[in-house]
Length: 158
Image (cartoon, rainbow, N blue to C red; front, side, top):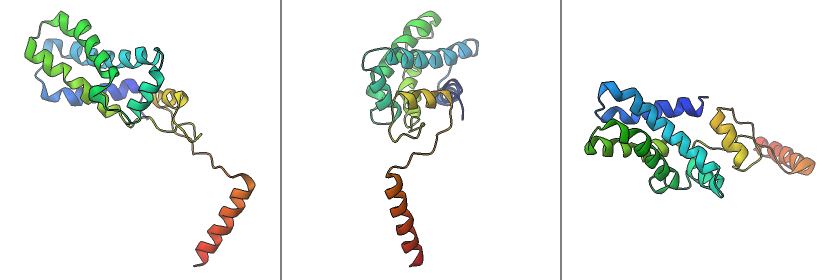
């Protein structure tokens, strides 16, 4: 599984294909988009309630277009990259408009990675680091496994 940095680079390159970016600043723009999204994710995680915001965004429960993560990424990109390049309002607007698409493609990225049956901070860290998911733990103990075994043999017999 790819790391978040790899995933972001691919997502940014794919999303930016429809925007004319001068070749002399293309790498700066693409890296700036990736860095802005990554910094937004990192800064959001460090704020009170930020983990829940990330969990909802990356699990697909909240909309990327209206997320504070997207707004922060747009602000970072505009202040740190676009303000220094002088690409013009139309190009700046088109590039900033890519951010909700990029973050939206990250939705659904977070799953139950540690097999404990829920999505939590540990799952976010594991997902973003490129870890492979563990199989979900089964509950029910001995009685549950006996009942499952008996039910399974009955159903197979039919």
